[in-house]
Amino acid sequence: MSLIDLTHSVVPDLPVYPGDPIPRIEQVAELGRDGFNAYCLCTGTHVGTHMDAPLHMIAGGGFVCDLPVTQFIGRGRLIDARGRGVVTGELLRGIRIGKGDIVLVLTGWDQHLRDDTYYRDYPEVAPDFAHELARAGVAVMGLDTPSPDRPPFEVHKILLSQKVPIIENLTNLEALVGVRRFEVIALPAKLQCDAAPVRVIARVSAVTPRR
Image (cartoon, rainbow, N blue to C red):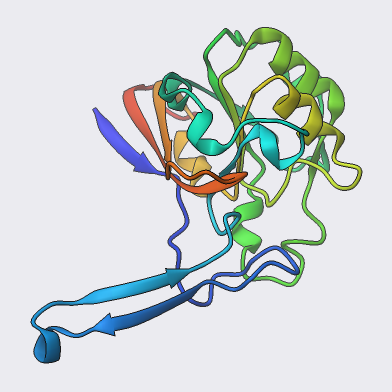
């Protein structure tokens, strides 16, 4: 088995969604002076690779800390949507999506993280794609873009209303192309908030050679 990290590092110059607070990482104790190192982190909950909980878009929806841990680990399904401006339900044809699966959408957009276009021109997920995932009973949807949609955020509401959390700003999904079986482990900080940073890894058990 091998582990693949799908998470952006949180660093002081990490780009954030327009209007969100920039993460501040401040060293508050030094080894030579205090006998230990310690840091203070001040950040918005939607920084970097993070998980949206239902409360983010649904009135009365649950916090991140209300989500059951059983949702955070599951069989992975990769949807290769590279080169598409819209991720439609057509991409799910012939792919077995089942209850409890964690569906990851590869667009390749993470390569633009530090470009001015990242938060402006990202590909969107179509409502029919979201409805298919909700009907299948997936545990989580994740993607390598800053959002699955734009105002009025229909896709967010389709998924979060069905208690399907959304992981945004994934990276390195290309490493899963050609992988036959993998498990996703996505553990968010247990915060009483609408979203939380999440460390996402794929545990790979078998690989199909690339052609």
